[in-house]
Length: 462
Ligand code: HEM
Image 1 (cartoon, rainbow, N blue to C red):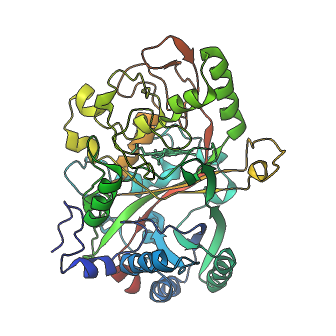
Image 2 (cartoon, rainbow, N blue to C red; image 1 turned 135 degrees about the horizontal axis):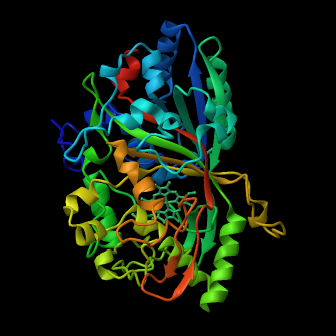
Image 3 (tube, helix red, strand yellow; image 1 turned 30 degrees about the vertical axis):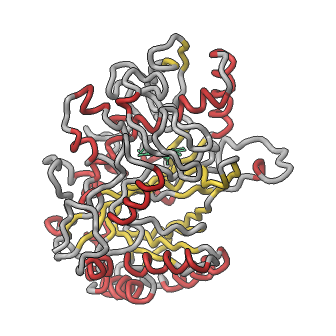
C-alpha cells in the first residue's frame, strides 16, 4: 500500500498502479504551453452526463502514469508531445450527478480542522460574506460566466496550439444535449530571455513556477542535486495534495481563480518607489516579490549550479525581513520558518500548508513583442491560477497571509503582489527600514471555483 505520508518512490512495485489510478497534473505539472479550461453546467439528463464523463475518461483523460511517460518521451525527442486532459468536478457537479453531501470528497490529514470541508461544500461564490470568506469582490461583480453554477471543468493542454483548438472543438461539440459550456478560458505560457536563459514568467515580468513542493522522491532527489537543500527541502508527502476518495481511490482538491493583473499600475508603483527609496527598480521589485525578475531570491541562496532555478533559502537567514520583507509575495505564501519561529506552531504544520501551483498566464502582450511600442496593459491579462491541495484550508494563505495586514507580524501590510484589501496598511521597505509605501490591489479576482479531481476509477465508473 502506497504511504501518502511520504513522497512517492518510483521503485516501489506499486508505484505504477498508483499513478495509473489518478489523473495527471496533480503529482507533477502537465508542462504544456497552451491550455483550454472548459467550464460547464451539467444538463438535466443525468445518465447522459455520467456517460459523457465516463467517455471522456476512457478516451481523453491522461493518467499520472501516462503523463509521466509522455514527459520522459518528450524530453528525449522534443516536439509537440501528446495532448493532455483532465476532468474536475465542483460540489454542485457531484450533487447534480446524484451524490449526497455525505459522499462529497473531504479533506484528510493531521492538521484538518472541523470546518475545513466547508470551502468545497459551499463553493467559491457562496463563501463571500461567510466568516471564512476572502477579501474577494462579491460574486455579483465577477465575469458573467462565473456567476452561473459551475459543475465541472475539462482542462485540455497541448504544445501544439492548433491541435488544442481542434480538441476544444471536439469536446465542446460532444457536450451537445449533455451540458452547457459557460466559457472556455485559454492559457498560454509567457517566456522572457534573461542572461540565465529563457524562463517562464508571469505578466508582471518575474520568473514563475520555480518553487514547488515535490511529491516524487526521485524528482526531489534530482532537484536537490541541482538546486541544493542546505536551507530548504522541497520534498513533500503525497498527502499534501492527495486524499482518499469516498469510493476507494485518490483525488485532489483544486482552487481555480481567474486573476486579472494591472501590469501598468504595478510597474508605475515600482518606478515611484524606486525614486522615493533611491534604489534601482530591480531592487524594489525584489522587495515586492521576494525574488528578482530572473528568479534570484532576495535572500541569499545555497544553490550553486548557475543553470538551476535557485530555491535553496529559508527565512531563518532573514528573521527581520531585511532582504525579503514580510509583505513580499513569496514570504507571505510560503513563510519558510516564520510560522514556527514567530508563532511557535510546529514546522510540520507550516510545511503542510504548502500548495502545488499549476496556473498559466492568459492574455496577449503586444507590448512585449519585438518593437513593442504599446503600453503595458491595465486589464485583459492575468493568471489562470490553479493549485492542488489535500485540504482547501491550505489556500487560507490567500486570506490569512496575502490579504492580511498582520500575517506573522502585526501591521506589515498585505502581499505587495496579490494582496486585496480595501484598507491596506503601509508597508515598510525593507521590513525594519524607513521607506513607507502602499502596494496593494494590483490583482483582481474575475471569477473562480473549487473543484475536486476524482480518481480514474470514479470517472470511468460514472
Ligand atoms: C511564487 C507571481 C498568485 C502562491 C510566485 C513567484 C511569482 C509569483 C513571480 C516567484 C517564483 C516562484 O517561486 O515560482 C504571482 C502572480 C500572481 C500569483 C503574478 C497573481 C496574478 C498567487 C496566488 C497564490 C500564490 C493566488 C496563493 C494564494 C505562491 C506560492 C509561491 C509563489 C506558494 C512559491 C513561494 C515559495 O515557495 O517560495 N508567485 N503569484 N501565488 N506564489 Fe504566486
